[in-house]
Length: 422
Ligand code: AMP
Image 1 (cartoon, rainbow, N blue to C red):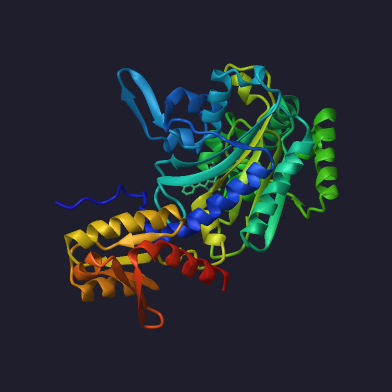
Image 2: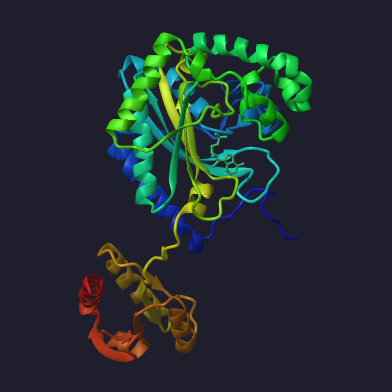
């Protein structure tokens, strides 16, 4: 019997992992340069954590969670990491130890969606969470940090969209205004939006259906309902972005799917690669009430998450394969042993090295070395071993020289260094 990976979940084999490494390394380098430190949390959390934070009337909670019962505990594989991060922040009383915390993560997430191109059931997200700073300067800095990251990754045609939902006061005011507008037009909405109307009318704003969009076109705007302090926050955000020299668009339809957002929302899009309709590289925003809602102090927060599979589609093709290793082709048991010893010394000297210890013929070992693109191949035969020598083959030039085993590591190290410099 043969097994296959679970539907919607992918293997990433070593020959494809180079691009992942490049993306993850750039992400770490950029966010660490802004003072973010890595957070790692369990894959599984109490189901209620996600229901409370993401919101009951969301696709994620209603349809997409992998939940199960274990010894009477209701558990869920995390569909995102903001809730887990807040749980950890509250659990470890981090706010009593430091006024501002900057955290990042790179981790797999799980959602039981219908698998399609760019939509998987296990996918990877990288994100940041910033606690303890309510000001719009940190919002602007975060957006600017993301633009720096995508620019470093070579992703062109970036479009930054921003919006504000206001705080709870503005939102309540807006909700009423929106409901007043929608109620007489209820019949014109899709069935799903009709259901959502009283519970979560804001979600209707970002409905993909043309029918809903036609109704929403002339709906009142959130920005027109912002209370004074929310409006000041919004205006200041734009001033900081202007100071950073950023081009952006205000998108009144940007409300995002999760319940916990307040004030600033942002998305960055790109038409690079063939992302099609799924051209949003990252989405994020403020969630000033969430820490308190999950049992912590009244600590403001802002964060974002990006799907790594999608960023990879937008990244330009480059050669991410590592340089080929040094290669040992030993003949016979004693030579294999000697190869292990010398290969270890080479690795300690920083040279990537492989030993072919299958006990095959020289011809087959050289074929494998060629397949790997190897330049330097060390052949150790039994008689050579007795004399403390080996053959060093330059496969690119088809040249062979004899070297003393005692001088082998230094010789290879200098050869590899001079090639690196060339
Ligand atoms: P969300 O947490 O829903 O705001 O999603 C944030 C980002 O994660 C999206 O922009 C996608 O890039 C990515 N994402 C969400 N769901 C999936 C999925 N099922 N498969 C792959 N990527 C996803």
